[in-house]
Image (cartoon, rainbow, N blue to C red; front, side, top):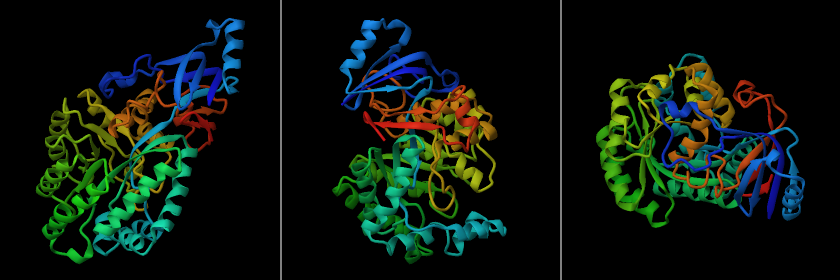
Length: 419
């Protein structure tokens, strides 16, 4: 199957050579585009692109005849698909009543102490079959596809037993098999301490290290390992134990870091070679210096910060330290029931004063690096996966995050096929 897309008003985030490393600092301010363009796909890959004005009549006719399908963009724009590098897409049910509790003045931590929060989702998931869990998750997967996402990282963490963590990760893998999404999976057994280990966090960490990690690894279910390093959840010492064991099985660390306090999550993530450190509401110069040159991507989750009504990370200061930033949705039932990357970009602009160029790079190129798929996803480049979307008629790429509640996508193309 081949597509020839012609008369593209603007081809966005075009890279003649794919970046060899994440974009950081000032490099994130540049968003290369091509005006008046065409793009050709072959199979599931981008075969080439160029300027319409450079094609004479014969070349244009040959391009059209050689394609299985011709798509006339007719003055619309083409973007690479979003790469959402932090989600909890696999969950059962919903938690809107906790939203009501929050409106009545309870904090996230207070709700958790009452048996709500993550433990609420744990109980719901335990009582849901794998097939039903898949059905619910596929609805959310097709939702994010419709919103422009082409690659997604999915975490476990609502199981907290060997059986239920494996059930979650199997569902995540099945999402990658039953949809055109590129799926990367993360084992997050250390998301919360389950009720059966109340008062014995160390005992639960023992179970993660002794039982869960080997079981997950035996089925090859996780690309990454994550831990919620935060007061009331897990400590730096816990992270050292879990990371130390997981890396033996080839799982790359990630960290829920510094969401609610200066927890040490950034430092322990860097120590163990984390691909990303995520959240980062409580960070400053000490954390920024640790991150410099570490290879870890600072992943911002503005949807959760918005939903929990917290102060936002110092993103502009991170750029001054030349750090690479990614933006992800954190789609989950408790602190961000949304997978709309356009809205996440808008929040990053409004609340953190980032530029449109920065947020678009953060949601594509750097998101791809944060989940290890940058060789195939994240920008428009020859040889990359043909995962992109065609907009409706819009005046500029800045209009995408500006018009944050409007449906602006006309056509989804994933792996060279239209959806």
